[in-house]
Image (cartoon, helix red, strand yellow):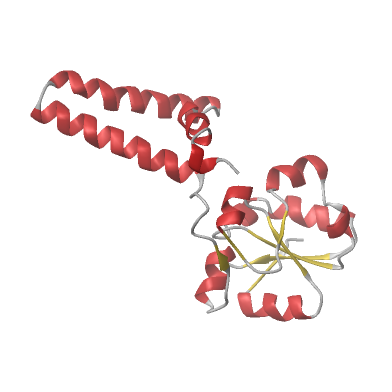
Amino acid sequence: MTISIISAMEAKDKLAAGAILIDIRQPEEYHREHIDGSILQPLDELQHQGLSKTLKQGSCLIFHCKSGARTAGQADFLKQLAQENHCEAYLLQDGITGWKNAGLATRFNPSQPIEIMRQVQIVAGSLILLGSLLGWWISPYFYWLPAFVGAGLTFAGISGFCGMAKLLSLMPWNRR
């Protein structure tokens, strides 16, 4: 049996009836924008520790992420988690994006930094573009910069360790 996917309006009705909305994204994503009343329980914590005491009290749980892809990818795990705790479980269709597309409000804090992986994409893309342009205009030696960044991204994809993400997490704007 699979976990049911519900629309934002159905989720809103269930929340009014006492359901608990669980945001499985990372803390930096949640702090930047979240659905009011949702409880942050990152997916990796759910996988290692299960539901928190507060969440175990709920009889109906609605899980969401940003677009619905993470929750859909973990549907079997989330369904099993709910069954172990004897409660109904649903996935919010299209995640927080679907919630906003339905015209429902979120809490947005622009003072919070964007997610680390988006920062990595911005920096890596900028370095690749800069190295390519400098290589074209000034010296072919600058082509080493995009090659280095590409090698780092390949290593990050293979190993799961991203040095640029670690470095960016130390920046002042990413500290809480």
